[in-house]
Structure formats: C-alpha cells, structure tokens
Image (cartoon, rainbow, N blue to C red; front, side):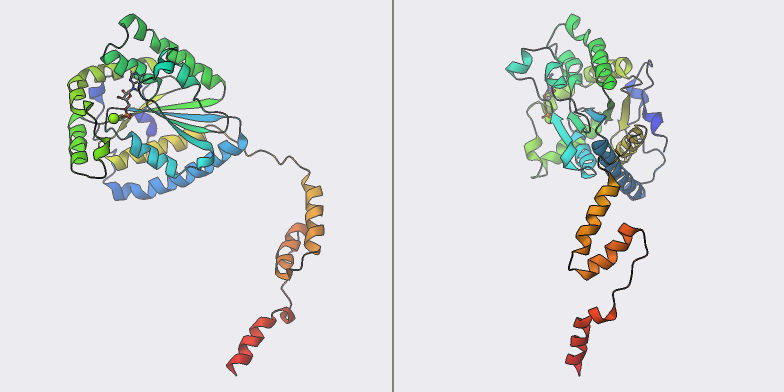
Length: 313
Ligand code: AMP
Ligand code: MG
C-alpha cells in the first residue's frame, strides 16, 4: 500500500472534493484487510516497546474529523496495539474558563508527549482554526494568525524529538447522517447523540473550507497531515495502522544498552543457580550461562513417573 499517496504534500493547495471518502485503494473488503491490520498491530506493539525503552523520542498523533467521523473507533484500534504504560489519549473539549483565559496553545503544550510516550489528541489545537473559525468565536484577525503559530509550535515539538502525525478522518456528509441515524437505533450509542449534531450539519461547507485551509497551510515535513478515507471503517483502520508503522519505523529507535556489567551479573547469577534446589531449572539455565549445550536430567531424578507405573500394576 502506498500510504504516502494519502499525505498532503507540504505547500500544496488542498480541495477536499479531490479526496474520495469511499476510497479503499484496491482492497476488496474488510476480510482482505484483516491480516494486514493484525500484522501492523504486532509491529506497532514492538515499535512502541522500542520507543518507550529508548526514551529519547515521542509520538504525537493528532485526530481531527467531523462529528461521527470515527475518532473514537480509531483510538480504540490504535490503542489495542499499544501498552497503556506509555500511551495516553487526550481529549479536547470547548475550553474551560481557566483554559480560555490563556493563549490557545497553553492547554495543548501542557499535554504534549514526554520522551518515550505516545499521545493521541482526540481533537486538538486545530479546533482553534476549525470550530472557532466556523462559528466566529474570535475575530478573523485572531484565528488567521494561528496557522503560523501552530506551525511554529509543532516545529518546537519536533525539534525536541516529537514525531507528529496528523490524521483527518474524511467522511461524506451522507455517511455522517447514516451514522447519526444508526446511533438513534442503537441503545448502546444513544448517549453519543448531542443537541448540536443535526444543527451543525448546516455548516458542513464552512467546515470543509476551514479544513482545506488547515491542510494547505499546516502540512509540513516534520508534521504532515494525512487525509484518511473513512467511510469504510476497516479501510480507515488499515491505513492508519500502516501510516503509524511506517512513521515509527522511520524514527530509527534503538534498544538501550544494558547499564550494568553483564559479565559480573552473569557470575552472580551462576553462584545463585548453583545453590538452587530445582535441578530442572539448573540443568536448563546453567549451560546457557556458561555458553554450553544443555545437559539431560539424569533418569534417577524422574522418580515420580515410576510411582505412576507401579499404580497401574
Ligand atoms: P466531542 O469531541 O464530541 O465530545 O465534542 C467536543 C466539542 O468541543 C466539539 O463540539 C468541539 O468542536 C468543541 N471544542 C473543542 N475544542 C474547542 C475550542 N478550542 N473552542 C471551541 N470549541 C471546542
Ligand atoms: Mg460529538
């Protein structure tokens, strides 16, 4: 799969209508993607282990989408492959009074990943050039300066060892309606329905224009935007897993060297093992320590089996 064909080339002018939300890139169906997704999940798990143990870099995944675009489902899939020990999801709602009293990046910077960590932003600083712009929550003079501020901010994170991957989950307006309707018919999902869902649909075109500017102005080498065709959830999961694997592979992480003198520790281990009463453990482990072939446990020590034979007679 050529995951780079979904990348917004830095400096290009984006038109959302050029991106087909139904695209499945030659795959036939969910079943065809299943094996590849599993393979990628295993790779992601290994890569995250390396990132964590290396402790020198971090990964920030930014998720943006229209309502019902699949942010929650994507997070569930990405996280399924990761160890919660060093992975975190950070959701951003409308700013609370303290957040609103600061600059728009204040709450974001505070939640950026630390070294060794993977952080997923469920919405992000991009809301400040999306919903804020669509609803005129601040004057144009204010939001229009934010693209540059965002680029500078992300440059700062990147310079500090944070790899940034930004994913726009692209669904069609019809698919959104379909998903809203399915929430109405699914008791497990009615809690997700919000008053604004249908009202917000009248601003669809304004949102698309805001996304077009965001993608055009803020896709950078060190912090690229990808447009993920997301009408088919399985394809979305496949592509996201592929992008994350390729991104993390390019981070050239290395497992750290041992911090102790392994020769000394081996001697200590040998001493302890020789004192150990579990003969099976000794027979299996001692040769490994000494760099020899394992010895077979002498027959005399397999006494319990004989007792079982006696019973049969
Ligand atoms: P949800 O993610 O569905 O729980 O909704 C969160 C809501 O918070 C969405 O309607 C966002 O548009 C809104 N939101 C997030 N960040 C901001 C922001 N900076 N300014 C205004 N609204 C925001
Ligand atoms: Mg919502």
